[in-house]
Length: 200
Image (cartoon, rainbow, N blue to C red; front, side, top):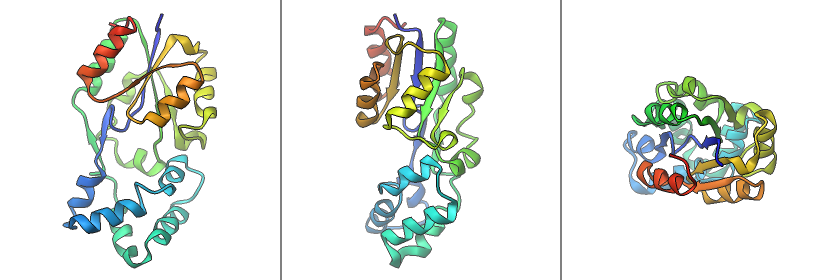
């Protein structure tokens, strides 16, 4: 029986709209692609979310990925205000599951800078029962340690948890720790999958 629903944040409870964020600066498709390759689509972005490096150290890694566009990299990452988009359904969705008796947690790769600068999109956090953000623990999905820490901290039995994430790699790691998983596409699809697990 499922007792706990665990949500990823990016592209599940909020939108991670890096494309729209870069586009707002007036860049063409080629430059957007270069910026993405140097930042959000690079392996270094995971280290950003992990929170082990300073802001200057992370920026240096991004710049090393494409030195000729250093000024552009610094410009688009100066503020995260439009990088994260609020989803109107998040609060009501969380409240729904809690009213049905489920514990609701979050487990997300999230940087310190994003956490501080995107509160407009994270207004659902007061409604969850806890969770883990990667930068706070210096661990990121899909590291097995982050799932184990969540299970231990909240005294969870993995077979009584379902984890919703948009990234297959993160779900496969969760499965290896014994959690039930759903690859999130949209609310309707997720609710249909939850229903199959007896969550309703």
